[in-house]
Length: 76
Image (cartoon, rainbow, N blue to C red; front, side, top):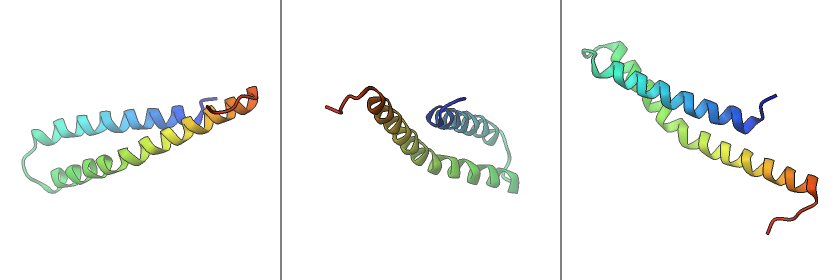
């Protein structure tokens, strides 16, 4: 089973790849409703990435704390 932070990381990577591919499509399109929709979609992706990164970092920190608890160590 994949851990939650790995899934989030994969989602971040997929979002970035999709944004890049969409940007490539947009650059060759004439103005249209579809082009406007794709631009809006990429803007939403760009807005979502920072919160996805924060969530990833939080999950990594939780994972580290769980490992430390399992081994009886303390954060220094």
